[in-house]
Amino acid sequence: MKQYSSSCVQNQAPILKIIKPLLQDKRTVLEVGSGTGQHAVFFAQQMPHLNWQASDQSQYLPSVNAWIDEANLDNLPSAIELDVTQPWPELKVDSIFSANTTHIMSWEMVINFFQGIRQTLETGGLFILYGPFNYNAQYTSQSNANFDLWLKDKDAQSAIRDFEALNALAKQADLHLINDYEMPANNRILVWEKA
Image (cartoon, rainbow, N blue to C red; front, side, top):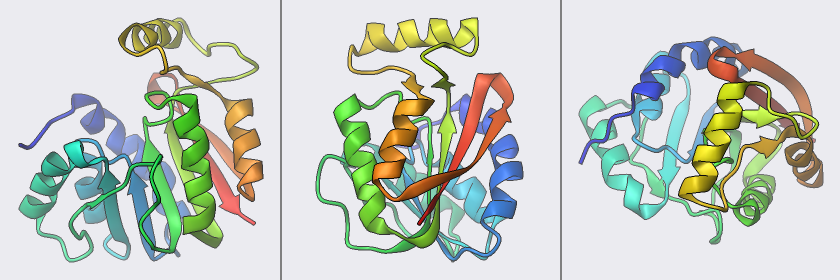
């Protein structure tokens, strides 16, 4: 039931260092693509002022909710089902967080993702996206190039996304980029604000 990801453990402290100051005056985070559930528990523990709403496709919810149930935190309710290709749950939040999702989605799903963000994120809210990205259609490292080959071998629809393409979708969703942070292991954190 409870899934475990070693990369979650490796990246959670570096991610926290960046997002904690960004979220210090926010109230509610919707995490899209909670995966195992480890990030939701860790970030909710470290930022008790936030209501952290985990979400994912139905097949991932048993693991996410197993982590959430065990943690038993006041600011971490049960995870909700969210499939970016379906109508999103009726909620408004002042921040959305997602880690390692856009490269495992098809491009059509990425488009749907940004459309969902547009309707769910309040004005002045933040969208924080962690993962590997290309710039000017170029890999930032050989390891990312290798990872991209591995992704496409598993699923032809998957790929490390170009920052410029993501930023174009963000602009269509009334989001403007406010920061792009370099992270360990050739990852980045992109932060957009809803206009």
